[in-house]
Length: 201
Image (cartoon, rainbow, N blue to C red; front, side):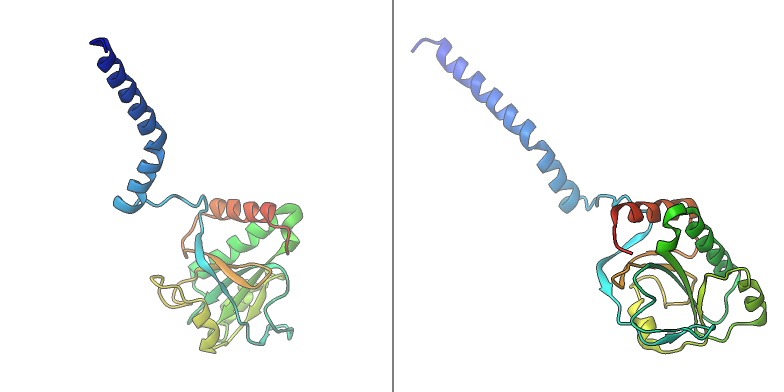
C-alpha cells in the first residue's frame, strides 16, 4: 500500500461523516428544540386549541324566546360566550365581534351560530342592547355548574369570569377558545380556515 492510500481513505471517511451530519441535522435540531430547549411549533391558529377536544354533554337548555335545545344547539359550528354576574362592556363588544364574524363569512354564514349563556337574569340595559342581535341564541339565569365545569380550562380562570369565546364543532366537541380581549380579524381568519377544511355543519 502506498503512502497516499491511508490519506485517501481518511478523506473518504471525512466526507461520509459530513454527509451523515447534513442528513441528520434536521432531526437533531428538532430533537434539541423540542426536548432540550422546549421550543414548541406554532399550530398556525390564533385561537387556543383544546387538546384533546372535549366531548360536551349538553343539558336541556331553553332560550329566552322559548326554544328548547337538547344535546346542544344542532349540527352547526357554535360560537359561545358565557356571561357571569353581568354582560359588561367587554362582553357586549365580544357579542358584536361574534355577529360581525358570522356576517363576514359570506356563504358560510349559516354554518355558524352565536350563543350567549348568562348565569344571572339579563339586565334591562343588556336586553335593550340585544335587540340588535336577532340571530343570537340567549339563555339567561342558568346556574347548573355541570355545564360550566365542562368549559373550564386550567389556567384561564372560572367560566364566565371574563367573556371568553368558545368554539364548539357540529359534533359537539369543545375545540378552541379565545381570550376576552382578542383581535377580531385573526379570529375571523381561524373560522374561515375551519370552514374551508371542514365539510360538516
